Length: 373
Image (cartoon, rainbow, N blue to C red):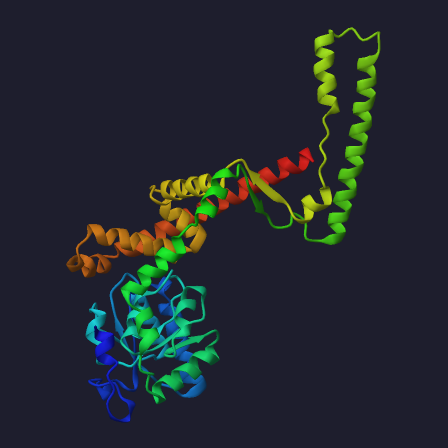
């Protein structure tokens, strides 16, 4: 509704009701976490100021455990950030015309969709999570500091395009629901094929990338296999000897084992290994979801997030979980007590210990397998 209201245009192409005092300002709204790109935003604004002379005022809306650290960082670099606390994004519909969001930790950023729906410019990182938004004329993605400065100059000196027709419809909940249903849709043919298949082949990265080394390993494996087959031939001849004292039943079993061949294309195995799972695609999806749910919801879930995505990602999840237990009014008291810093230090130490332990276990496993080869 706000988007449709702001789509009404007045003289000079201005959005009706927008306060011109905000024309030279930009804003950010979201949790105050470094994983949301707050530190990156400070660096980009610092570069804009030093390289292009753009000393832009930025209004920051939101709360979070990294607010103090970010404020200190901005102060050291002389960046003009104004902190306003939490606010409903809809209340900013008639103020700023430029929204800046450097975050690359989203799946699909809600605040970007809201800003575009309200007819604002959005300056965001060129990242897979933002690909959907690049089709809108008011979305200005950047992949470098120079592009960020160019987009910022353009947004401050121009007015956003009116959000009309198909673009406006694409940002509605109805369209989002249709896209979700379409993405999740499985045809009857796909369903039958997935249920009938009894295995899944997964392409793996090359075991040995160096061609010369791969050739040496390949030749070594071929020679080893040749010697092993000669050994089996001699053993089979011994089994057929009338002087062999083994019972006929045992001889038959040994002969059947000796006749089995391991026909492996070693060159292909080293170059393009393939993991085959005795599961249908549907069963594999179910198993992977069960593993993810069990691990991510367990007490060690945050440790996994730290290992996979860094300390900021683990801390962000901890912050979200804690918010469910601590009321919003107690947030400032928690942040000011120093407990948040202590928690982050503990998480960092746990992450380091786990990485060291995993590295040792992996090294030992590689040595063990290499000895077998």
